[in-house]
Length: 464
Image (cartoon, rainbow, N blue to C red; front, side, top):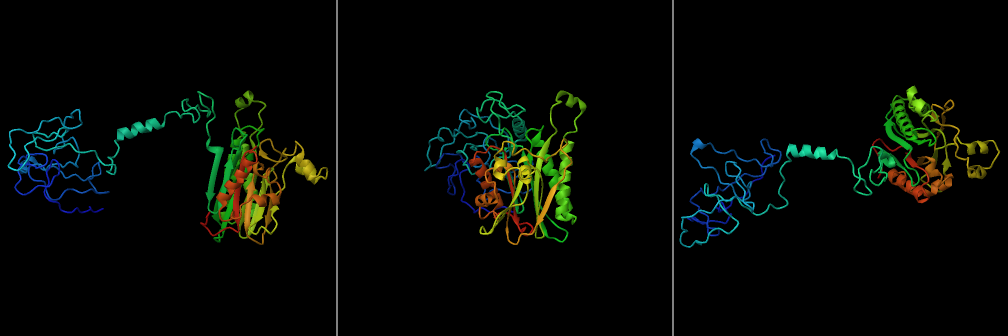
């Protein structure tokens, strides 16, 4: 970048920058001996930004003149670097922070100039007759670039153990608990939010669980003909199993990766969703592959397990797939039209209702209601993904959620009432509202919800 020009200024005292008159031998303000150095030049170096050769201070300092040239070194002004002479040599510091050199003597001031010495606290150097003291730098001056050694020290500090957010004194151990007060520290998965094009999802630990065992994955892509497609996967870890949080995370990631790859290759969304659930099942099964020695120490542990529910919106189709008791709801933008629940639970309660043995109210009031009959995991029966396709005749929003949400809005009508009216254009905001509804209701379980507008907006569109 080119330098910014400065306006020419009248000759000034090199010590206090007081304007001088032609022929003055001493400064009328500070008594500085002007015969010791040449008059200050009319132009001065200006600040440069991004120019080659600029030093660590951000200023393009002119190189010193060679001694053989016969020209004296240009004087520094009070706005230059403090504490150095014109050759760059560090000066000794006085207790007041200025070079401890006495003022010049033996040079009477001319007629009309004050005979008093320079003010106390503003000494000058007898060798060059140049003052290096100056008032404190204003706040807007650019700071010098950090010393690499200081930066390295800061990096070492960043690696120090974390301090407890509760007592502010104890260190946090590897398990996430304070060694002083035992307070559990916030974990990254306690609250997660994500947007991917027009899709958004939010997951929260809730108010009763010690960790978040839910997970989600969202994405958007395009079919071979350029048609946009959006997708969301939500998984709920089975708390009675080992490492349910790892199971849900592995399943959600494997499913969304398989879905995106299949859709981009032109696979029908319903078939792609079926295959993605199978891929998620295989990812969870792999977590159970432990060495025999590990099983010897924990023989009664169940294999990692989770449920899964997913949805794809593409080419006017709304496709859902699931194993377990997480759900998908359809909520039209026109709330005069009916909402609908698009999945059936793999649960004890659902089986009782399907067999005609209990009413829905009776079944879900039973303590066994949420016992699942289908899940992903090495100890599950043969996985049979459920899939279904729909062709809504109007715009709306697809709600993909765990029971941590639908426990507080079980029917389609109840879900429609709590989904914000602008959810299709502000899915992240709406997802936050839905999670907040579950927390306000008690937050007894982990809460996860993903929202997909239907039809899928043009590629690259997102929340307003």
